[in-house]
Length: 287
Image: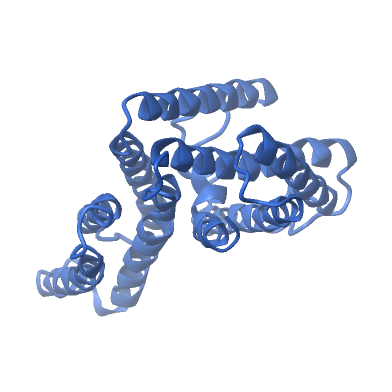
């Protein structure tokens, strides 16, 4: 199990580095946007499958369409002064679309009245989780787009963010295996321990300082990098517990099986998705 997990983790990291390098070589952020859209749509599919195990049939196609439009509009926001107003149109359009579809479902007898709140709520959660929060991964990629070296600038920040958050997972995993004794929240994740959390956050803080220098972020001070590592470590583990809550409620061990030893796409992205909005705003404030 550990061997498969390490192999898959190395493949994912190397693949990501190659894709970001290609993004840099071709001098376009569109490649990162395409990769993110594909990953988030896979994640949305896994989310819909977990919901289905609870007897909830979300409006997958509609949610996927508006997730695509939301991520696509992240790039468009930098190309036109009109596009920011489209965000509101997309959100409003999503609300109206799923409301109309739900009324239609009731009309043809596909759902009963008792399923309305669950179906609409799950659809809204999927959109908020994968599109609104997940979209900030692309916002980080586009960070500093107005600077002369914007391509390098944005990729550096995205790599920095991913490395810090994922280092928390690595640190927590190995520290927990070696020293873990006190369960964090046994009902949600039996393998997580308080000692693992402390080790993971400490590792993230250490690497936040190292990578801040290595990647040439520069704008973050020593204490700023420490604080960033602390916040990302704590939020990353909280985000991981949130996905564990979703999996527990659906009675599944992993969100999917596409990545051997690691599970599904959501199992890889979970700590990044809910952490990305905070990371973006911290970059705006401190960088």
